[in-house]
Amino acid sequence: MSDEQQVPGTADGTGAESGGVHRAGFVALVGRPNVGKSTLTNALVGEKVAITSTKPQTTRRAIRGIVTREDSQIILVDTPGVHRPRTLLGERLNDLVRETLGEVDVVGFCLPADQKIGPGDRFIAEDLVEMRTGRRGPRVVAIVTKIDLVGRDVLAEHLLNVDQLMDFDEIVPISAVKGEQIDVLMDVVTRQLPEGPQLYPDDQLTEETRDDRISELIREAALEGVRDELPHSIAVVVEEVVEVDPDGDAFTPVEPGTGRLVVRATLFVERDSQKGIIIGRGGSRLKEVGSQARSEINALLGRKVHLDLRVKVAKEWQRDPKQLGRLGF
Image (cartoon, rainbow, N blue to C red; front, side):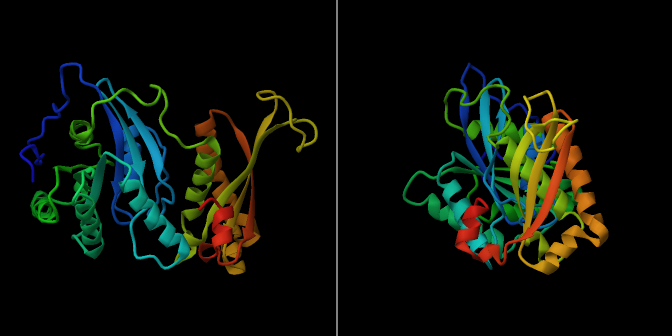
């Protein structure tokens, strides 16, 4: 543990450097599924750029969120949860995480305070130690998440266990939900970044495209209330976002800003039985998904949209290389 480690109750959030030095770089958030990476990304950026769910393995891409401060620009890379893969999709997600770790300046290793350190955490730690052997690897900051869920004694014991996991550059306990120590974490991460100029415009918050963000919001809505293996079987593709004549042909495009904005998207599942679950009795479930997703898409685009959803079966797509490619994996 470094001399600069943050300890609960002692960090004052004054870690930002003075003297005109500007730092910029990439910070990957890694950890097991459901440790709070996406929630933390959104808290740091200050806007929803990554979807969240209680379902494990929600994140399927390396999603970049951008935090611009006076002294630094932090490009956060929210990665899929590292897990024991059961499908080709799972293998590709784990490969994506390892590839991302080799390209960033800092790794934020997320370890939830309400869960004991387990085999998955040790597996990630071993990978990070190996990356830093024999060459300059990324700096590694342990981020102890969800501290609002435990008492001080449990947190203190967890911090000691985290410290023994590997040689971290810093350890910072935080609560993304409560906003506790978020500024401290940004100061700590900034100290680990290389000196350099700003990489993105001040007002850019993510590298995600409009259509990617829309598809993720639809998938987030579809994940609510589903059970068993179904969350992993859902994929969403935005087919088109088009302005149409509100008084004429619903498929005739018109000039941007002059018509009704229509989002047409397809939800893919792996089996006919799953299709029935997503649609629900009389289409009730799909209507709920559409209603929830539409409100989020309205907020994202700053205007009301008409959301046209279809559900299709792509049999065993998680295991099929060709279908994975078509679905963007």
